[in-house]
Every structure is written in structure tokens, then in C-alpha cells.
Length: 374
Image (cartoon, rainbow, N blue to C red; front, side, top):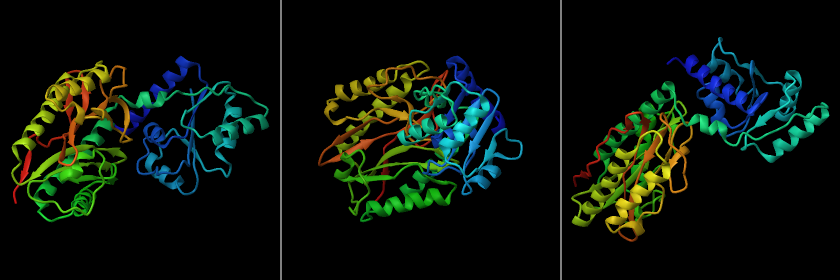
């Protein structure tokens, strides 16, 4: 699928939603939603500096001089987006577009700030217009759940880099290295081999630190017999990878191997149960059952998995509260774990797509417990 076809398909999906809801226009300010809708790569950062105004027959994007040329270069000369960097605030710009388009119902994102909402009401009043301003209720997040082929290509490439990094780091780790040293090498490898950034702050947690699911890398020295939890991912063209592997430095104990096998069994049973239309919480509850039946239910507290895409945490998810169907085309992680305080932790995570034939991981690294020789 070409980028232009992918972009056109996303706009069509949004406009279909607008028609169903009776929206004359939609205002978007959330950067991940703008990245998805425009297809502009390597433009967005942490600043809320852009606003889109979408109608049934028009696409406008307001930005400023820091980003304007990047948008022009990324979108290309054939883009239907009308770009401007008028020296007005975003609320005034939206009010002007609402007036010009005679929009009576202008839907805005739930994530917009109260300050922007108040400013927009003020600017609309100054123009003597009073369109309805319904909230989108995270409708764009729901549209983004189903990935198109362009998105899947980028996600697979992000995961390819992430898998290669795992092979590299397994050949690098030696006793008496710190968790911080391992993180630095892992991240440097990804950034030197195609990643545009990091999906999130890398987790390297060895020995008892591994019992903390979101442990931060420390100065702890890894030693023989340690299990090392590595949760990380490469960012590629604004799309994320997410993967966790637990390795053992030297031969594992009987207990370590037994617990690892339970986590692996939970992972593989849940992955086999995933298909379009399953309820996310049902898959999560299956992971809880497998781990609880093995006697470790008290040591598994987080959700089984989450959606991945332009954001590292997206809809849908395999959590205890996700009581909705998981659609075909969604990209979701599967990451059960067992965490024994004062001893060790184990997590095994893949990221993959839900297809009509079931769950297909992007992750290529084996589920076998990797033993690093000492």
C-alpha cells in the first residue's frame, strides 16, 4: 500500500465517522492522531503545536515556522492538506475555519486542554458564531486500533531492529557489568542500526531487581546465576516495537527454569486463544488462570498486554477492564510475568497483529530460555 493510499483510507474512515455522527468538522490537536491522519513522518515532537480542521471536503493544518518546512517535505507536493503558519493562536485559527466553512457542529478531541476549549469558545463568540462542540470520546483512538498495511510495514521494521538488538546484547553481556552498561549498549545498537529513537525507557533488571516489573536500570553488577529481564523497543518512523526477554547469566536453577516454563506456557496458551472478536479481559483472565493454577497467582499483578502503534500504549488491550472485542488488524502485546520479591522476576513479551487466522507475532526471537555462557 502506498503512503498516499494509506493516508486517503484514514481520511475516508474519519469522514465516514463524521457523517454517522452528524459532525460538520473535526478539530484535532493530539500529535499521535495527527501523525496517523496526515502520514507526516519525523515531524511531531512533544509540543502541542499543530491543529487540524477536517470537513467533508477540506483538510487544513495549522502549524508554525519551526515545523512548516518539515511538513512540506514530508507530505510532498501532491498532498491535499492546506498548510499555513498564520501568526494567530490555534483557537482563533479554528474559529476562522469554522466561520469560513459555516460549520454548525465542530467535534473536538477529549484530550484537548481546558485552556484551549475556553479560548475556542471565546474566539467563536468574538466572531458571533456558536457551533456545537461535542467531544469525540476517543473515536480517533478507536479508528487507530485497526492498522493498515503501511503501518504494519513500519511496525515490522521496528521489531526487526529490536530482535537484532537482542541477539547483539546476548553476545555482549558478561558478569560484573552494570545494568546501566547493558542498557547503554542495547540502546546504542538500536540507534546505530536503523532506529530513529527508542520506544520507551529501557528496562534492564537483574536478580532481585527483576521482581519489579518497571524497574529502572541501576549500578547493580550482574553475576552468575542472575536472571536478567530486558524490556525495550526500537522506534522506526514514529512507530514502536515492544519486546521482553528474560535471559540467564550461566545455568539457571531448577526453580528459575520451572517458573520460566510457567510464564512461557501462559504466553503461548494466550497467544493461541487470540482471534478477531475475542474480549480482551477474557484473554487476560486466561493468563491469570494458567499462572494461578501453577501456584503463582499472587506474583502476577499487571495486565497481559496492550495495543502498540504510533504510541507505545494504545487501544485495545488484554487487561482485566477491557470488556470490548479485539478487532482484526489490531497490534497487541502478550506479556505475562511472575515476580518473586527478593529473588527474581520473569517476563516474556511478543508484539504482533491479530489476523483472521489468529495472532501473528512480529517478534522473531525464540521463547526458549536464553542461557548466556560465563
